[in-house]
Image (tube, rainbow, N blue to C red; front, side, top):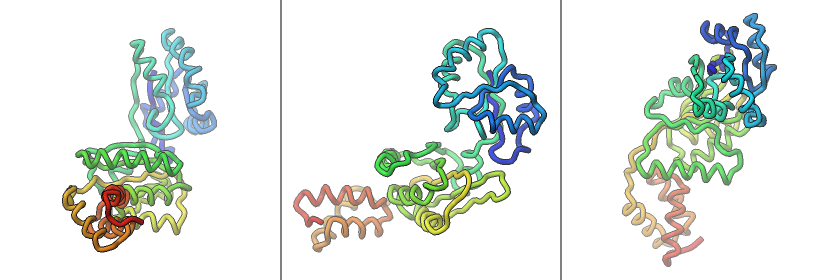
Length: 282
């Protein structure tokens, strides 16, 4: 079985080796036969296609393994980009590897890596996190986990995929979790006619896309966490001073977060802990 990377927008990006592999396959496994069919037709490749997606991968895997054991050549593609990266196919590949079957790949386009290299942010190390949960609560919890890893020492550029209709909301959530001044970039429509890479702080990008709806495929790149200039002792001292001055927990957290450029959620959580110890409450 061969994993074949396909264009992420510009159909001219299909490599000669990728096309040769697809033409020589006994079948092409794809997310959507309409999308892959258009690609194959553009290059004059008449190859049988089999749907493989999140809803049928478990059922199809035993049949596909049997075909691989029989010596058939199967090519696996996604609708766009490198297979398995936020796309189906991992369960099939894992099962094939476990059986000792041959698994190869033809490299090519990948939106996450392209956005990373265009972002102007440190390219390594980077952490690809795919799509965040679409709902606010689970998304905040996922980002809190990343922020906890950063406080424990993680220093990496973060890469996310996002749907255009959720972009402004997600950027606001990122600003809340990581601080509005964290440098970031939004890349969309990569390799297409209206390709755009917009760079700025998370707050700036959230404001821009809150006023101007995004279109097309989107990748969000967030710069690594800065070194924590404010230690726990200093943070507590600032919060206690603000609380002792009569400020509410919420106002104290907002003022200290702004002064230290720490994420407001982190500062508010600590302010609540100190407030329960006897300081002023909301």
